[in-house]
Structures are given as C-alpha cells and as structure tokens.
Length: 290
Image 1 (cartoon, rainbow, N blue to C red):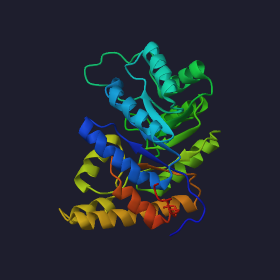
Image 2 (image 1 turned 180 degrees about the horizontal axis):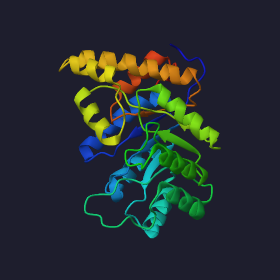
Image 3 (image 1 turned 90 degrees about the vertical axis):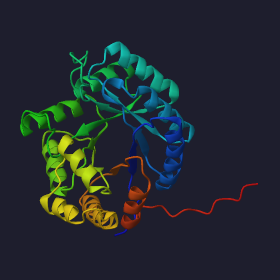
Image 4 (image 1 turned 90 degrees about the horizontal axis):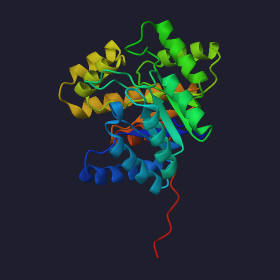
C-alpha cells in the first residue's frame, strides 16, 4: 500500500571492521539516503569496544550531511569516560544519542558507575541539558533479562521519565505486541513516541539464531514457513518481504509515528520494503554536473 503522507524513517548501521568495509559502507549509505532518513544511528560495542569504529562512522555521516545518532552504552563505563565521549560527540556535530545500558562484556567484574539505562539518560541530561535528543530502547516482548514483564515495564517508564525524547523498540514480528506495549506505557504517563524497530527477513538461519539470543519472538507460522524453504534464498526473501511489509503497513495505519530499520549494513532489503510500502520519495531530476 502507498502512504501519501511523508512517514519519518530512521536507519541503524553497525561500524565497519576495516577500511575496505568502510568504503563499501559509504556506498550502501548513499543508496539508502534516497529514503531521506530523519537520522542514522551507529551501534556501540559492549563496554565501548567499537568506539573508534563507531565515532569514525559518525564523522563520515556528519560529513555526508546526515543527522547522525550515536549509540552509547553505560555498562562497565565510568562517568568520566562517558563525559569524554559526550564531549567528542558534541565536537563532531552529533546531536542525537541512543542511550543504552548495554551488555556486560565477558570478563567484566563490575557494572561501572551507571548500572541502568535510566541512569545514563539522567547523567546525559545533567551534563549536557537539552543539547542531545535522546532515544532509549523499548522491548514490546519483554527484555530477555527482565525479572518479570511488570518489572520491565516499570524500568522503561523510569527511563522515559528520566529525560528521553523517544524510544526505539527491539524488532518484533507481531504487531499486537507493539500496540499493547505502547498502550500500557501511555497508561503509565509515558508520552514520548514509541518507534517500532523493523528487521527485514533475508537470512532465516541467522535471524533465528539472533532472535533466540535477544528475546525477539518469531511466530511459529513464520518460523515453520522459513524452515520449509531450506536454502531457497529467493523464496525466503520474497516471503520475508511480504510478511514484514504487511506488518509495517498495519503499524502505520494504526498510529506508529515512524519506522526505524535495522539495516544490517545492507541497502536492498530496506529499499525493497520501502518500495512496497510506497515510502520511497519521488526523486527530482538532478541538475547536470558542470
């Protein structure tokens, strides 16, 4: 279906491991900029393990004229190290942060100065006021390490009230989980936009492994259909495109404020989804180079 009104979109990338991959990534970003994203975020490894690659990618994005957002995790970090990172982000021209608790890297024995995502949001606000737009994570299907659904909901409400501007959800394939979460937190006084995170389906084995580890539910009927295709990648991608596009369409019709795409550093899956949804802007002819 086509959505005539402009739907805000955002894109997530992970940092390149080397210069060769970074050059390829620049081309992938150029392909995706046709979508005119509101911002592009770059992930941040546990304990800051990818900081150099993350910040390098952010600099490239800013130079490309994109509103760049840095993931920032607090687990295992000190207030001094986060203060330094905030200063670096300011100096680069980054004005958005995706504030996360983060996963504890193996071998870490301490949690650091800030134990929760809400602590990080509060600290960023104390240090920088309203300079940064802060996104936080939301888990419609409950965080895998949460003590209970109620505890997870309470943790999110605290995080939102600590000073977040909006929330990006973990990906899901059941729109009802998103709507229930949105309505439950709204009933608790959370007024920030809850933006659904969208994962294109391109590789069944990888998706199932990743989903099992991060607590994202793949409905049984989708899992069985994917398994039935075996190594037939064309059928997996065609089915995945249909399923995810149908879900996105329902999300938008029923009030999702925006869509946040997990690109997995690929352009074709997201461009295909946006094309089916009618979200690819009509391009104006570019003036011929002199």
